[in-house]
Amino acid sequence: MMNQKAVVVFSGGQDSTTCLFWALERFDEVIAVTFDYGQKNKLEIECAAKIAKELGVEHHILDMGLLNQLAPNALTREDIPVEAGKDGALPSTFVEGRNHLFFSFAAVLAKGKGCHHIVVGVSQTDFSGYPDCRNDFVKSLNVTLNLAMDYAFEFHTPLMWIDKEQTWALADSMGKLDYVRENTLTCYEGVKGDGCGKCPSCVLRKQGLERYLSHKKQPEEKEVSQ
Ligand code: ZN
Image 1 (cartoon, rainbow, N blue to C red):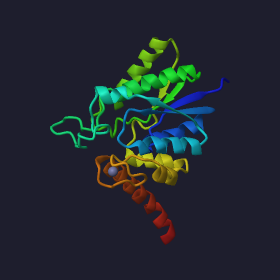
Image 2 (cartoon, protein in one colour):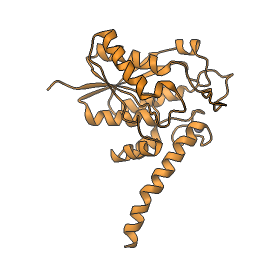
Image 3 (cartoon, rainbow, N blue to C red):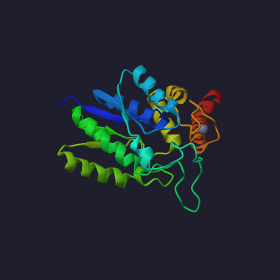
Image 4 (cartoon, rainbow, N blue to C red):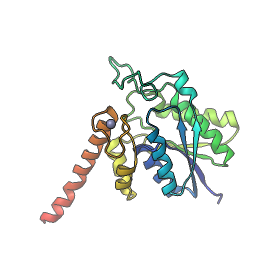
């Protein structure tokens, strides 16, 4: 059997860190790739680098500053506030074309490294209307990249059909809930771990965690009372 290698698109957040652990359980060799697109929170990239180092994973940080130039958004521009989308519009944190470009560059890296597998942490369940988090998009891009590079890529999306609560459950099933909770950064204000607690990203993360922990606690309590 051939050595199975995977590239994980890795931001240092909850979702992609869970995917990194998922990949480490399945593939012989895992490489993480983080994109620097001029995020205001440099800490995000530092978190990613620290996690990759702790897990002994080869880590590449690629410059995608072009995205900040092309697609103004609240994650890279000081003058754009973080806001939910009104009347069906996308929130100001949406970066046009981000996953399309990231996944394509990840594929170039993957082929260069002899990796056929690419793992991405997108979810159609919690996708806030982001078109490039949808399953159809990932499937379509997979075909396009295979044709573009004459190479058999296989995209993996372990979080596609699960919500934040189930993403915590997945981390817990691998024994990594505390690690993911303490070491990842999802907060738009750049606060590691449980975050600022107020921004849309923290609210989503916190709700999922609280739901997971409360559902998890119930069977244990029953055991104690028996
Ligand atoms: Zn926050």
